[in-house]
Amino acid sequence: MSNNETQCGCCEINENEKFSLLRQTIEKYEAKESNLIQILHMAQAIFGYLPENVLITIADEMNLSMSRIQGVVSFYSLFSTQPKGKHTIKVCLGTACYVRGGSKIVERIKELLEIDVGETTKDMTFSLEVMRCIGACGLAPAIAIDDTVYKRVNPNKLRQILAQYE
Ligand code: FES
Image (cartoon, rainbow, N blue to C red; front, side, top):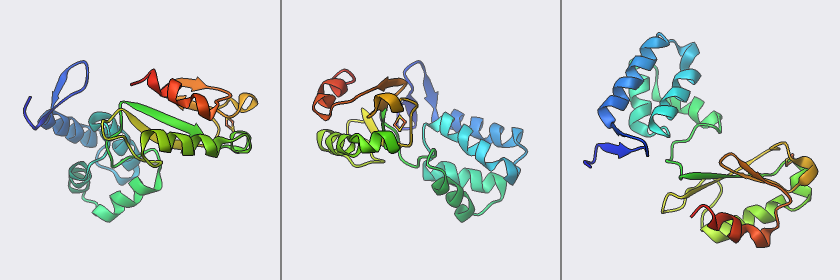
């Protein structure tokens, strides 16, 4: 595989094809500033995250300044300028989870994976995020790994939970 190709698991997508798809998306949204958020969403879906060369392309194609694009990207936590791991761990820090030890869970995961919130492990297996309420307040503290929610999480059991994904 050459440097300008990436493997998505089901097929190989050439980097040039991704940029072509991005330009088509911008065109579909008529390069209107009012559609910037949708365009960024689509760009993140195509590339997996929003690297600088993608933001530069969007700025050029839409005739917007980089600071305008970066302002929107940094405002919304769902946009990421860093590549994400294969699995995303979301630790709930909503009120119910927080009072039942949510922050201890965050600290334990940080210790186990040697990363901070918002970071990805070096082997690209896990990304760590925090969020507010994942709908399991009655069984707090809760975490979600991808689409699976773990309830009444005991920090001492985290190693076992994470091991299933390694
Ligand atoms: S506060 Fe954590 S699930 Fe609702």
